[in-house]
Image 1: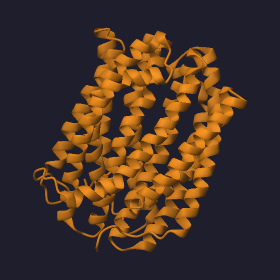
Image 2: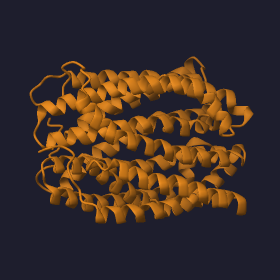
Image 3: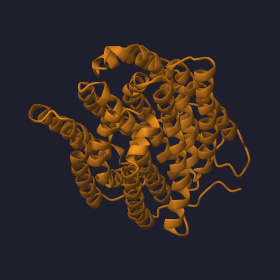
Image 4: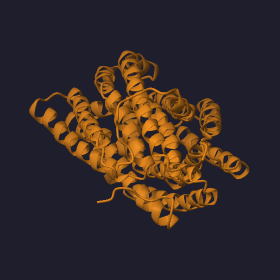
Amino acid sequence: MNTHVDLLHGSVYKGLLYFALPLLATSMIQLLFSTADMLFAGNLLGMGAAAAIGSSTMIVFFLINFLLGLSAGASVVISQYFGAKKPGNVRSAMQNGIIIAIVGGIILTVLSYVLSPYILVLTNVPDNIMDMASTYIQIYSVSIVFTAVYDMGFSAMRSVGNSRSPFIYLAIGGIVHIILNAFFLLVFEMGVEGLAWSTVLSQILIVILVFRNLLDKNPENPIHLEGLHPDPFYTYPILRIGLPVAIQSTVITLSNIIIQAQINLFGDEIIAAFSVYLKIDNIVWLSTVAFGQAAMIFVGQNLGANNVSRAKEGVMKCLIISVGITFAVSMLVLWFGRPLFGLFISDAAVIGYGIIILMILMPLYFLYAIMEVLSGALKGAGQSFAAMSIILIDMCVVRMIILMIVMAVCPELWAVIMVYPVTWIITVATLALYYKVRPLTSIIEV
């Protein structure tokens, strides 16, 4: 079966959907890794364990988003060389991306293991769940290097139009993860340690599957490893594009950690509600990310092929699809809010706080879809520094100013949550203005 989608020819709508939907399914499977932990913790270990895992969620996002930013840099370079029909450059860029992932993953694994307990203290995690949260995040840290490698491998596959193989590999890993969760909790009674170790082992399995694909030297495989050779010619553009995206992602996550720290002051019930909300939120958020990545790859390949008009057409049609799907999914999440929260936890007060959060955010979540597609298009054109600058100013600096005002004037849960959609509106307006006045251009010579 052909796993590659042609984004350079034919129907734009068809190409985007065929490429993005497996990517979305992949993201949903990836969500199972953390969601499964919350489900098992909330139902078998109690609210304290669920809050402990939830309180470390933002730290995990902080680290993984940095690695995803680096892989985005590789995606742009690989996709543009693929569009320009330069297979040798495609393979060399992919190999250097893997090297960056290994080195970056090892560094972040060490930093996460050493620093995470101190970060938990800084984010006001309550003493009664501190030990569980610290144990979970330190064991989870071991998996970061494996996450870095398979995310880079996935980026390489997607850059040449293959979004199906990552879905298959993550589906296998997700199933194994759930089985291991049940095994470690019910058989060995390992608590949150077992949940963390099941993540590590399932991530290792995914890395093995990814390398099996990358080592395949079938002529139809546009990417395959022939040995890892560092080359500044490829490392530089990957880092030039990827580092701004990584910084953008981590600083946004840092701003969310600061908001989490304020929410942690409201007590265990609201901590648990917000922690569960973050898992449910991912259902909607991942749909926006999938189409943001689709826009990035579509723009990258078509600019590499010197087809600017098709790249712009892809952005507009990706906006239509992404906004429509995101709005529909967010309304479904809002409608089924109570049973969704009930999957994680049975406490009525926690569910009540969770519904308040859903009612504020879900109706406006389509704004995030617009933001992801526009920023993805800019990244695909190599303009990641501009996208980073806009998003950092609006989603971090402006967000923190608004948060400080809210905490001084109205320190209530609903007011803190309103900080999110207000900054979404500001960011979308700024990105749309920049996209309108700035042309899309390729970063490679074609």
